[in-house]
Amino acid sequence: MSTDTINLDSPLQLAINLTDEQFWQLCQRNRDYRFEANSQGDLIIMPPTGSDTGRRNIKITTQLEIWNSKHKLGIAFDSSTGFTLPNGAKRSPDASWIKLARWNNLTTEEQEKFAPICPDFVVELRSKTDALKPLQEKMQEYLDNGAKLGWLIDRQNQQVEIYRTNQPVEIIKSPSSLSGENILPNFILDLTEIL
Image (cartoon, rainbow, N blue to C red; front, side, top):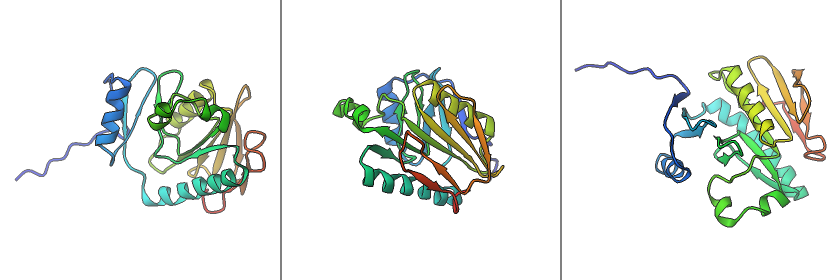
């Protein structure tokens, strides 16, 4: 009996062009996998996060949702949420937020699937297996498609890259917290157990 295994790159990127409906069905039928698609339509298959990354990620989404429930300025999303960006890419940030007026401008059908909108705020949490450059490119893609503020939390280098519209990327070493600035007024993310 052979025990040969096939090693695949992670994340795996395949040149397969799917319609929006086919992509939706693929995700619905394979809920144990994480899928994204780039603006060229290439399918990106990502492994589920490890337990430690998941533990840290929930701390981000919990703090974001607590702030959002208090201020009611928009809608917060977790890492299982997909969005179709204006450039056609289908992305799932680790945490995200959309202003209420922008969300309410979508139809009910658009809200139920991969909403055709780029979040105003996005967070990506780099796990130990994530290469930095693709995450930086993804953060820039969010900005290019309408995000106003983004945080790339890089545990490996103990730093946060802050992405803002029409500004150079700011890198902060070992911050204990981050401010939502004027995009998320009065939101402070405590990084104590995240970074």
